[in-house]
Image (tube, rainbow, N blue to C red; front, side, top):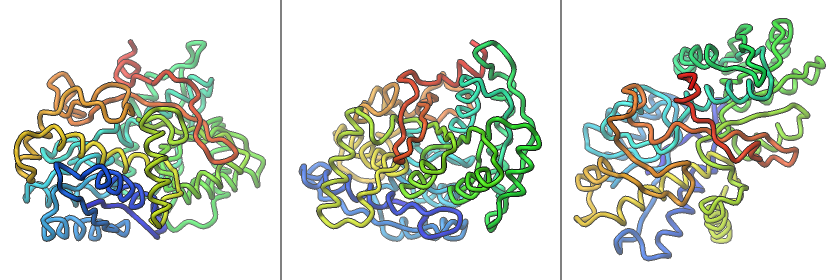
Length: 374
């Protein structure tokens, strides 16, 4: 099963379902998982905690092998149900508490906390020294925002200057007029805006900035934006920065090339949304590929208990060359708060006018080192 959000004010990622299906089609064409053909069940969480829990219960009732490649901000409503049934959640986007501590959670990307901390360091390295924060008015976002203080304290500009948090604005999910929020950030003197928002709010904020003649760097998590979002923001005229734990979908990394080929084959096969080559699509595809990588290495029968056991001992796995270092699911050397996070590196991208993400540098941000000041 793949769980994501489609058709809501808080998020719309049809390409997640398409990317999971593209990966499954490619796996089945190559012979399946250990000779077994794979079926991917998609569940829309409707951007609600109740919808997310319903998806998890459906996964249990359908006896899925695993949940893979999911993109939901309500994993605290998903993981406990999966944990009770012993079903692993592979390649999930880590946002909530259980993503970081549940024994069935196996994220392969750094997640929202690292993305937004990375944005602060990336803006600082671009000499943006006054940063305002635009927050979506949701409890999950408030929890993420609380983790930003360490990055603000550690980030420095190339000249060694400190980075100032000039203030924040809270934007309701239902907001339709963004000029007051843009004006407040402009008044605070923010030359960079960390947008911890749903894509629709980022688009609204960008348009409002243009309307009042306000120029500032907008930064966010690149995988939050679907294909149409990047097209709109790319044409906005604003500088848009996005961090992610994988290189861009349009890049030359072997996994990105394979991803595009699988999506093209899925599009040819009539899979809706397979032409939408966004970061969230790449990460969903990578989640299914990671699951296949683990299954291929199993010497036991392919069942959920044995898969869960195998996932606990993944070390040195190369997931299509998309991660800055090999995938290791558990490590005693990691800080307890991020013990289940496979890696803490961030690629820095700038959005191009055509909607493609482009690396600002092949060098990744090493967040543990930056946060410690080393």
